[in-house]
Image (tube, rainbow, N blue to C red; front, side, top):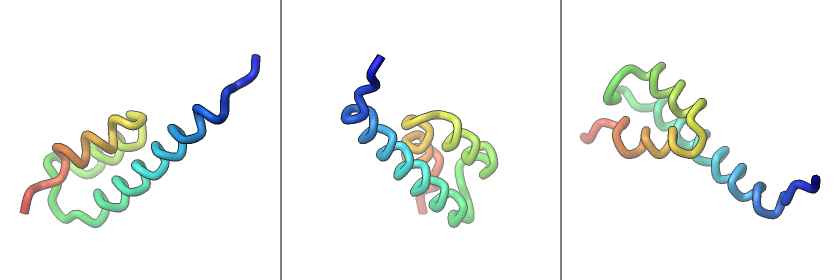
Length: 62
């Protein structure tokens, strides 16, 4: 079985960029909606949706 890397690679790259950006943002934020360690676990273990959830509901509005 041949893996179609042309279709999978962009999704993997997007996931890595989102995770890194969300983790950096979460670590730098002083206040989040909920505890930071829970958000870090959500970002790391929920592929694609974890970082999006953090940016939508995890960050506190200033």
